[in-house]
Image 1 (cartoon, rainbow, N blue to C red):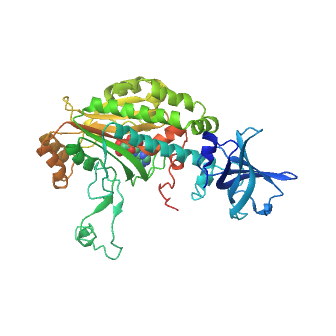
Image 2 (cartoon, rainbow, N blue to C red):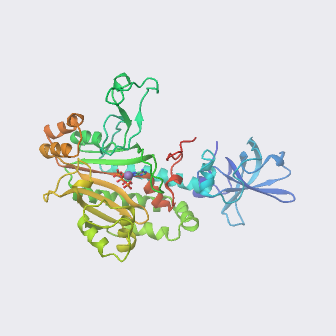
Image 3 (tube, rainbow, N blue to C red):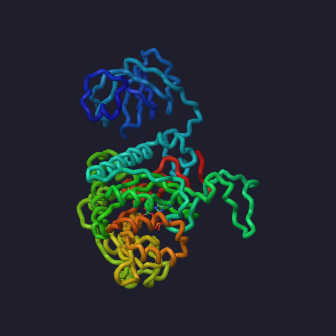
Length: 457
Ligand code: ATP
Ligand code: MN
């Protein structure tokens, strides 16, 4: 049976004979033996193999990228690595052509994006994926320990959650099928669902139906935005975690979001030590301190109006001028957390006009019970709100935002049949992975990134 390289480092295998499998990372040939390092993706460090040239083997075939199985005894290493294996038997599982692009040198993130199928074999990508996995696991752990139910909301939807219009259309109509109607719009009555359908931008509205019966639920699934945003923080396809909770108001919503972020970052610090040290050393100096800070401090909490005052007084020229009523831009969000408070900031009570129809109108009738959590370097990592639970006010808001009431009939029903105070938030999973790894570009923290003009592999 195969032993994972991780287990050899973490459990006691000293002087035991094991078989490991993996891909060759480096080969150094001496007179009578070769040093071969292999990696199986379970751990950051490679395992060093000492292969005597007396072994029956075509050493010519062992190159970077070759896949091997190796059987031998685990011994203490005199070198920098802790252990090594004295090979007794080596099998070449798959030879590697000499044009293998990942030869031993540093490759740029841009270049690696052109070979997404091989990118997982790099140290950095392996470490990112192990962090991503831990963050997903810790997310489920957090919510499960608090009696949230994991629910699945549809990916194909006929409603535009935010009314924002950044939707990918789902259709089986070809160009020649889509008959134009007189008014110029397309005839979807002949389409698969007999109506326009899209890839979802959020599972929230559906999750609200489940919170209105199961009390505490969360989703964790893919979401899609057809926005032409070529930034280091936007993808066309990304994963979102969306808890939705009945009997919870905006302030408790903020408390839960804050404790969730602390919990998962603490989990990473305790379970992914090797990876975090790797990112600290090679990707972002100061990362470890920044992550520890999140766990230890209390997030700053301010209102939108206070945020505007701070930005107005800031000794800094912003590209977008500051005035009450504007949507906060990334530069404003980052100023608040990076340069003013030096820590995560929760901003709440945004102007009604700039926020989605479902957010609860505050007593001032000008602002809504919305909250965004802003992180240094990342900007908005969480967006959430208390939802409007009052039927007539919600109905008014739907009208005011020029949405069709008939499209939201079922959503309004939730306010007619035993409506309750409820809240929720959405966390962009890739922005979280970015923050935890210190990786600059969001395209490097998801296996096969989709962004404008890019849907390869
Ligand atoms: P932004 O203003 O940064 O574009 P948003 O206001 O559109 O974000 P929401 O619609 O509130 O974001 O989505 C909830 C969360 O999903 C955000 O807080 C963010 O973490 C993440 N998110 C939003 N859009 C994207 C995207 N295009 N790619 C990756 N993550 C995203
Ligand atoms: Mn957006």
